Length: 108
Image 1 (cartoon, rainbow, N blue to C red):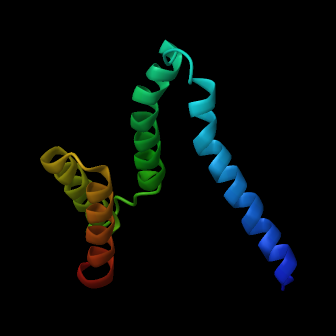
Image 2 (image 1 turned 180 degrees about the vertical axis):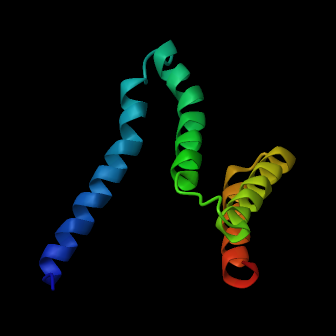
Image 3 (image 1 turned 135 degrees about the vertical axis):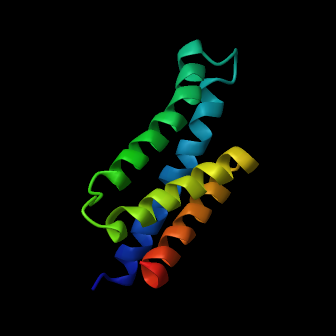
C-alpha cells in the first residue's frame, strides 16, 4: 500500500510530464514552420500504430474452429467499415471493440 504523500508525488510528476509533453512542441516550433520530417512522421505514424495494433490483436487467431476466428474477423470488418463510413478513429475502434466483446460473450 502506497502512502498518501507518495501517491500525490506520482500524480504531480505524471501531470507535469503530460503538461510538458503538450507544451514542448509549441516552444520548439514557435519561430518558423514545422520541419518536413516532423510532418512526415505526423502523417505516417498513426497508420503504422494502427497496423501494429491489428497485427498484435490478430497474432494468435485460431483457425481450427469457427469460434476461434469469426469474432475477430467480424470485429475487424466492423471496425474497417465504420472507419470508411464515418472516418472517425474513436468511433471505429470503440465500435469494433464492442462488437468483438458482444460476439465472444453472447454468440461464440
